[in-house]
Image (cartoon, rainbow, N blue to C red; front, side):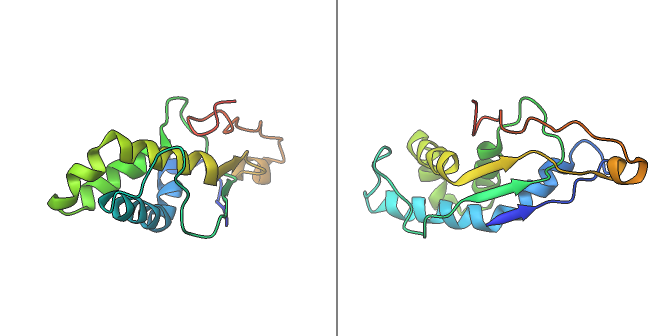
Amino acid sequence: MIYDLPRRTDTGEGEWKRQIMLTEAEMSTCMSEIEYQMRRGEVEIEKWLSSFQRWKMRFTNLAPLPADVDIPQLFLDKYLDKCPDNSKATISSSKFHKVFRKWCREAIGFEGPTKCECCEIFGKGHPKSDVYRTPLNPK
């Protein structure tokens, strides 16, 4: 699944967060599955695989990311805010976080921006943002 995001520079520094949160429904679905399997005692961190079809989510053309951004934590915090009280203990556990982060490392990729408004308007070559070095892909 490819999310080709509009690289906009006029909307402020938080544009990347708004763009990434467009995928909140997909992330919540994965977290619901992890939560369900944890309640049934079927999750071992190293062996766990999502029962969903193995696909990759790829973000392209994402607005510049701050150096200290933790994308999985954004989704974990959002999911925790929305979940009912009887689920909070499971979702707050370090095991849940580790399994979700493992899934993120395996399923999410980034490609640097290919264009932006300033390039289109002024015809200048905008330097590519090094989004590969995120907490998901530290290499």
